[in-house]
Image (cartoon, rainbow over all chains, first blue to last red; front, top):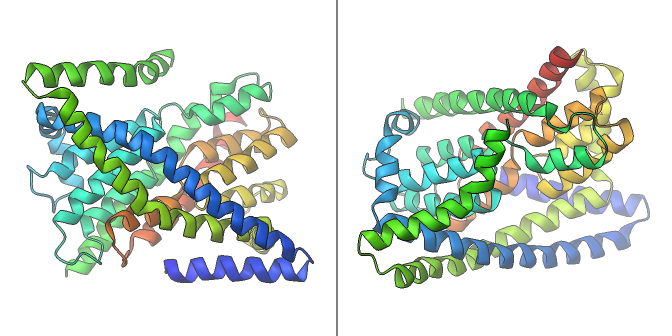
Length: 193
Length: 179
């Protein structure tokens, strides 16, 4: 699916640009995007090193395991295939907490770490496991308590009440997250039987 | 509400303080362990680089060429089918952009908020939509890419469906709460 979407976006973009006489923009967009990719990755390396270093400390101090134990009842229900002592649980919880608190640049390192731990449990390394699919479903539709960026934009545009959308945002994300978890569980069970 | 904002503000400094202290108390060689963990940051960053570039190039060409706008226009009938108001169609580019690119969606949302005003119906829906759901496409390709998984199975469907639910829920709740 991702191969097809990738190809369609690229080719349809080029066709539309050609049809509207903007073919030069394709070259520029592609080059700029490639440069931007390196920039993002480099920035991520810095932040990621910081958080993964900190996470190693938390692991060796036994904090990650303690956190995993505390939140195990809920998390185990969402991830039934994970062994209860899996180090992936700690990383998953840290990722979700960072997402909820709106700490976007801490969420990514923890999320990637969780994927690495989940991959260690994967019998077929090229194929996603059910736990990975569940994790990404929760991850892409995760509630953020304070959507700080958009509040900032609303402030700049002189909103009378920049934070009034917090409640509606939590509701909308809550709906998306509920559906994501339910549909994921549905697919998971269907593949099992 | 300010309580939550304070938590967000203090979370990182507190973690930076408490975790090393707890590790030191448990007799972990704090500096050396930190460095050993940080080493993985570089490897992971390098590993996701090609996935980032591949995705960014495709999305950028799609958006900059105007193909996104064409797709948005093709989706107008879907909005009518839901029985939504005529002016809600201005939200389509944002809804399409949201799963593809975080910074791109923020740009579209900011433009909508500026054009209609932050406290207008469209402005509030755009804010809600931008704040909910993540860039599904990006998270999936980069997260799976970082560990070399090529078969995503049903993950993409679930993510995109969640985005659609987020859109419908955003429109519904804003019209219910504010109008």
